[in-house]
Image (cartoon, rainbow, N blue to C red; front, side, top):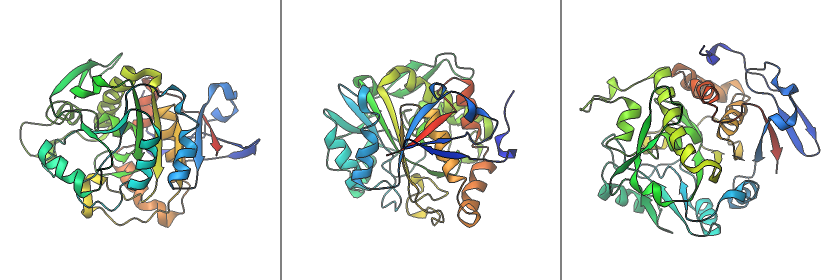
Length: 326
């Protein structure tokens, strides 16, 4: 049975013990009493800087070896809210044999073709290392294990060239997803433009964006798309959410993104994708009403919390977590 999380009250109790902040899940249903072995670890710093990013990454990087893709959202031209390049540069230069990875878009913006996309990368300053546009040379299908909506998902062909992946995400609102965190970053961001993104959006063969899939079915499609990539990398995929400049709009909105009303909160990192998404939502929902209102309305009006409950149903991680301050 689907959980309508938008109708639940959000609760958070915490206790500082030996440097670890143990936090309940947002639905407050007593799961905090479970043994810590049943919880994921989510590392947190409120230092949003290259040093802060490196401090949390150091806690989760044990499985990252071989050729490594760093999946970020590089944004439309001059986007004001994307993760600062100096932070990304320091991280990338610390990871041997790593490059940034992206895919072209389904919507006809400035990243729709590889040529336009590379121009946008230059405009936005992503020129300190190679950026591999994964679908530049086509796409490949990879399985969705135990999916209910898909049996396979189309991703950028170059994904197969990587051994590990670091999912570095600007956590924010989103016009269709309600919010965009790690899950959306790989669900849409690794799917190739012409096929995979079209599958996730259930889009027609025209530019009528109003007919694209919405609500819970879209959240479920995204989760299964993300699961394909998670299954491909297994334990060699880790997640970082940067809770900074959290507009209600995605970085795909570029300079048209709505003004930011929420304060910057920090950086979260985990080897567990559901846990980091749950922790990010928990943290956002503790904001004062004046800062929370627009984000909460965007998340719940799009039924975005279905991302969390469906990931749980698909066993894509753990809802329970210990928040460990770094």
